[in-house]
Image 1 (cartoon, rainbow, N blue to C red):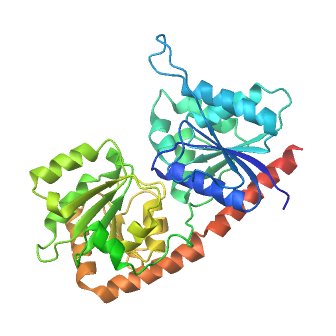
Image 2 (cartoon, rainbow, N blue to C red):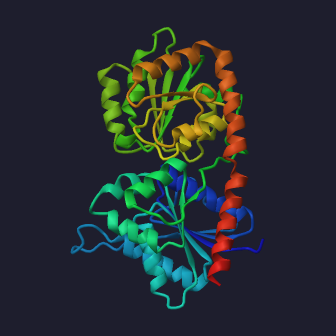
Image 3 (cartoon, one colour):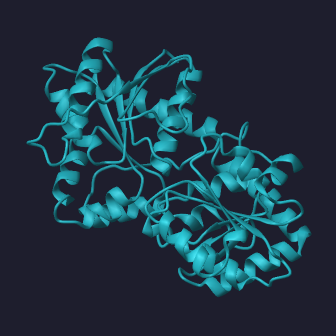
Length: 378
């Protein structure tokens, strides 16, 4: 395949959209494509230097007149500059707002520009903001001006059609995992460093927004028999972290909880866990679940959104209804008490990640999508 010139715009935070955008950019660069990544700061998983990928920070000027700095316009300007200078074949934006509109505006500023725009929806940009009258029509407009729209699960594709009354083509390309990095490891040193020292480790990874219901992980911990005494690892950062700290103090759980914050290389921590917890109210996909499965860690999660497309109940983990902390605590206790069951579900998760959510398969599908758009637009 001929090398493509691909721009990728994303948020730099710990959420799935920024992680997947960055991982896709790195994989495309490794396959010989010229990749340009745009965000207001360096994404968590973007190395300081990586051959084939250039990072373009979006600088937003602050003036007393602006109550809210116009990031969408600054992004449009930066995209336009690079689109013109590098003749980008594709600009692939992750998360609809403001990225889809910014890409469309950048292209409009370049008469005769043939850059194709791909918009990947990751969840709340459709399910939450899409239902908000302040954003619905502008998101719909951004989708209409995109040359291709990608959803990360069948569930999200159905939601997109319902929320926007959208009858155009949608591509479903699930999120993926790099199993050369996320893989089972036997490393007692990491477990001991995390505070395991013979204790079981539970892991919750998220951006700690209310939709993640991270407080339920503490409720699960409270309901576990004291003799199990696992340690709960909270990986990531977000607005609900102070609430969790306060709740941990109130319930006298601080000695059983570790707040790890944002760690760029999360693979050793993920593989060190015994059980991963995702009690989310809604998940368009559930990347944290997939990365845990790839590491051989069974998942206890909610039957919400796209999670059942990732976690097979009784095969790679257990699914409960949203808010069923009693049931999730029962599942966790069973997994901790039955190491053979834990190992069987963990191995099944590794196999499912390889068969259904491989990095190679996802990158190939994106390459095919890009080349088809370029060919049809020429």
